[in-house]
Image (cartoon, rainbow, N blue to C red; front, top):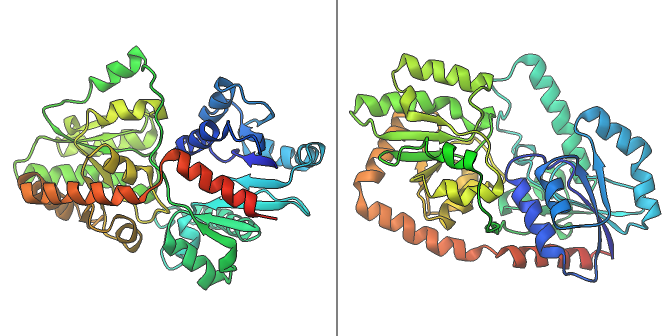
Length: 377
């Protein structure tokens, strides 16, 4: 079976590791001939080269370059290679007449229209983002088959948009398979910025209003008022990003700037080394399809402090500490309570160990994806 694997939308974030897992695990499947469509010079592109994969088609980053590709090159890739299925792992689906298309959907906000996901952006930004969402939804629903990461989104696709239930599949995320490679001296230096005598909470995320990173100075101020000065937030954003600079300015007003580490971006191979240095994971999102932060916190046996929302409860059950995402004093109290409550710590750990058993290994997940592709006629 000839499959065009569309990895073009995956340029950063947890999707990089998911794509890398698929590439690595699918190399030995002789019944598939894979053709790869990828954005040039991304981590995923480098993995394809490293694994000596063939049939790689690259597109330069940027909307203009993607449009040029879809207008002038896409049809040639499909027709010249007799592609039978187009599989978009994440992102807007790619479609071609009479060719089956499968799309993995992680756009949670498309299926929760009652949530004001883009609140906080300017009027013009809101218009732009909502137009993009409309395109993403239309492109996703046009697919012959949609893969979801959680049951709630799958049900909403059927109930809200009348998408045929029999054309959906639930495939839970897997814990990533991390390559056993050394990290750079520069990365080691960055690790040394994390003070091990503090309770370090990791926010493994880029800048996005949905992630609510902006609340960190207020949390630290609330902790400071209770004489708790040994909690630190390790945030994987560039220190020179304008948002990082603004956040640090606010932290300085509260005299808590020493409790924030802007760690910068992290490669998938560096994740295990980072988790060795931290004590917990913070995820204050308004909405997620899923997040690698969740399963990684369980895998590396770190407590997860997560927004108390419908989506998070459905995923994490009783294996997390739930917080009011917009209430700094509530988050502060939950952190203090967790650190002082040994029974709660043991309970969260036990529940996390149990729930992670429900999730497939990287190889099993890829086999589930390949089995689904085989079943589509």
